[in-house]
Image 1 (cartoon, rainbow, N blue to C red):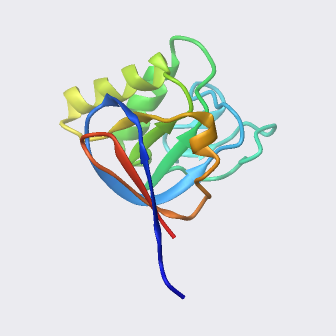
Image 2: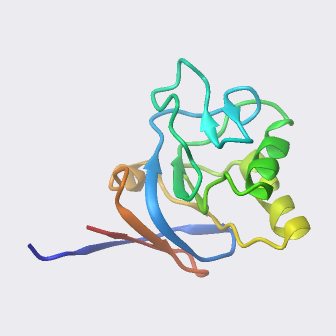
Length: 142
C-alpha cells in the first residue's frame, strides 16, 4: 500500500512547526470548565470526545467556547506538558491564540496555531500523522 500526503495551506495565527497525530474534535470545547488542564483531558460529559487526552496531539478544533478564562486553561496545560503540540482551527479564535501566545512567550515554547477552513478540516481524521511548518503548510500523511 502506498502512502500519500495531502497538503493544505493554512493561515498562520501563531508561527511554529510541529508534527504528530491528529485529534479532530467534532464540537467546540471550553478549556475553562470542560477541560482538565492538569491531565489534558476533555471532561465535558456532553462533548463527543469526552475523556480524550489532547497531550502530544495536533488538536484540530472548530473553535473554543467560553469566557476570558480560556487562555489561562490553555497556557496552564501547555506549561505542564499535558497540552497539544499545535492547534489547527476551523476559524480564528482569540482565546486559543492568546493562551498559546502566553505559553510561547512565558515558557519559551513553540506551539503553532493554524487556521484552515472547516471544509479543509474534514479532510483530517483522528490518528493521521500531521506536520505543520512555519509558513502555514499542513501535510496530512496517509
